[in-house]
Image (spheres, rainbow, N blue to C red):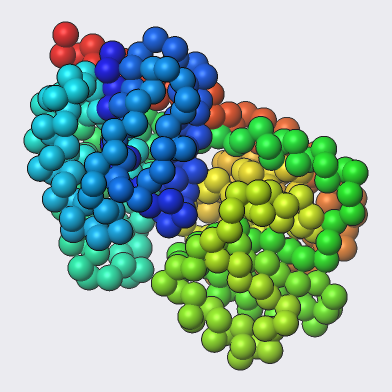
Length: 368
């Protein structure tokens, strides 16, 4: 097969988990599939490093800039269909929600989540228009749909009456290596949260819970690592109001090696998000053997598999109590660390790639 991968949406360092998904999926596909040809179609902002060096992977860079979303959408809908014809693509994988509607070959689209359906209050009106139209059209156009979790699959069925194939995401081997490194080093006095600063990530509640916790453990700090989303200014004002500017650090986007170091030295990990399609940072923390806390909502409950403390995402007191327990109870910390590594071992990018390749083959074969 000649498989096209529509990566026009990718803006390195600015699209969060969908970038982690795409980069690791391509690496894993290169490891398991030396036969099929892959054409990775990117925008002007994306460097060639995203394309595996395997001989059957090819980089096709388009001059459009994805940072200007209207231009990227127009390009995807008008130019990409002709690209598919010119390069004789048998099937197209769309990893980022949208698809070229006029493309003649079969397509598979990954629907990472349906946040715009579940929480439209977190979207600007103009953005909602794009989401509603383009995601609906991609779902109707695609031969098959992929979702990263069973809860995301159920959302697709509920809102669109279409089924999807659950392809759970994975964890890089580096995080399992970090678990060994943590054994040989002393953890620093900070709690870690890896998350974009968007409203649904529930960072405001985390900051308020940390304020309560900090009265008992003033030596501890909180590191918020991730992109500075459109809720950042609100969070910064709250931190200032609570007199925590010296105790809470917002890193913004950081290189992967710096993120690994934060995981290696963190005392505990907190993932307060009230909505996720999968929640990669939580599984990464489990793999690294970090005692972890997450909200008691899906898919985090299933992904954690009992290997993390959970709390009501509306309860400041509930999270503050979890922070105290995960800091003070050494027996609990040891139990969570061991359980987390066992639980995370089932999430491998090779499995994601295998399921994805199977779906691509099925979609391509359906027209033969």
